[in-house]
Image (cartoon, rainbow, N blue to C red; front, side, top):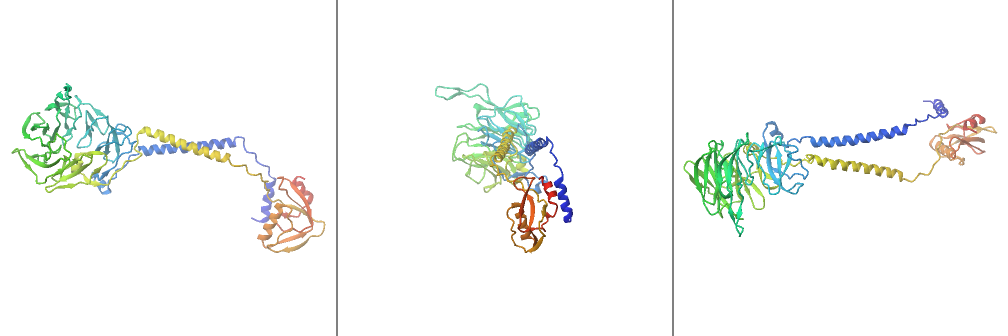
Length: 528
């Protein structure tokens, strides 16, 4: 663009009338800004909700995912206080359950870990025992049945007492529980019980919810039970202090007893997986310090094998195993046993002929975890540890979170407004108009002398003019000076008007903003 064209455009812009803004310009701008802010807040809320509802993928290894091999984690962490509940969003089938005191109601809650590693909470009433997980991970059995895939409760024809943990058959189709006597307990003047009602031991059919009595627990005594591998037989045993008790083998189809073996007060079933895989033997736990119905802080035990064909009992060579044992599954021909200790810790081990092999299974919470038996026997053990997702929260928790975010947004907006209004008003500085052509007329012939770069012009009475001259002379390759001259320059005090000054000092006639014109024409353009 040439200098002449540039100057012509500047003149045209100077002469053009200003365009008045519409009356609703600022109002529309504010409305558009509010809409953008509201849209941003809504988008954030939708994003948080989407993250909350997004399913969490399993943390199993890629190799396991490709082969559809189930994995049990090496460690399981505690849930968050606000974790999603089983009733709100079921996550069955599940891998395992465990009890925890890490809940909002400050009571014990049951934690359920799904096959996709999701966490769910099931709050328990004070004094209520945790329900028992089925081998396939689809059901919980307490006083009634709970479907873990739908969260629905299937009521039994008679509600179980839930005082003792239910025992499941390996096929998850039947289970055994107890129904407490309804006669109540009477006490003498010394507080001793006079009449303790017997408990009915019933077989529960999962499909129909029907219960069938198969045995009696005298005086509400503790009992243990174990199904054979095909579920056709049930070994049942009660423990009463100070007397021997019988171990009864019951046919689950006819409800008739098949065989009875007498056990001492220090012998009992080793757990719900006490039957060997070939159903030829039953494992017993033999207490070495006191009877199982009594409490011994330093109780130790060893394993015994009951041969059903000969009714003989053989002791293992290992002695003084610690804790309270419970056989829960079989793996590679060896029993998997949980050993509960007095400090509420639990070890999961595989019993061997020479001792025990710890399994890489550690679960937080209280006591021993309840594993899906199918996974213990077939899944890969010691997979990556899992932790809960904070986004798997109960629905109501998003209300205070949304309120907090909205409050923070309002506070930030208030702070920004306050900072704008609290700034001191800047000193009014006159608007420096764009450099305009200065009309120059002379009363004597113009004489010009060359000014070298770095020279300072003698004109300093006008800030605008002297600044322009300084920039011209110091940054260019030199300029031309003329003398004497009468000139008009823009006035910094009043925008849009021109001042009139006369000097006999030198003035540049070669600066681009200085053009020789008629004095009267220029003054008319300035409004004078």
